[in-house]
Image (cartoon, rainbow, N blue to C red; front, side, top):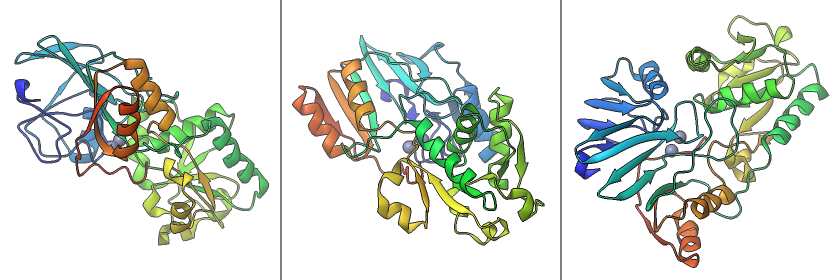
Length: 316
Ligand SMILES: [Zn+2]
Ligand SMILES: [Zn+2]
């Protein structure tokens, strides 16, 4: 953002960074000063240690150089924000990563009409249509209850997805203890400290196979096929990701129960959002840009690909 001399989600360390959310491909360590929501700053501190951060609450406006800046909810993970910038009568919205469906762990996406909308396109193909979250959670519970001697091991991105799966299970009436891999412990605690209720959680370390039979176990995707999983009672391997739509991806990870649950907008959410915001221009940052660009052009909206590299949403 040149008139404010600041960078948004820079992939290299910069003197002044504005960070949309805490995922590693957007929030990197080593910046001079970081402008972000209090939640995002707290996530960065858990991951990288103390930050020179300036917290900005949702809907607070600050002026940097000649630019008015405001962060509004993006509905992606706890603290995630779109950055709204007004400069010389023009409004640009940088959405970061976002989704439109409700998520009990974070504030809902707020649509802000704008001249230029900068969007991701992680699932920017018409084949990507995420099913209802509740029905995916019901498939998980059905599988869990089908064989009480086994556990269901759910691979879920440690920041956001893991906590969302837990709260969605609670919302479906699952009140049993849920076991977790140590790698998500601090983020669970952080979510709870911001008021997200996760119910009774137990560390897998020290638990016996017998105790974990008939239970849900949540772990980061990298742990699914790891030696660590041998301590679990005959796990049904599940994975919660938008990519589970693609069978081959599920097979690659030996996933028996693919759950299509994503923190990114699917094709309908992407196109619905652009329709709603009525921007004159759309800039597409990362993902499958071609199809969305084409869709914009057929709807008389100027669109361009920014071809940004370094933003990976592989497990999301
Ligand atoms: Zn993200
Ligand atoms: Zn991303």
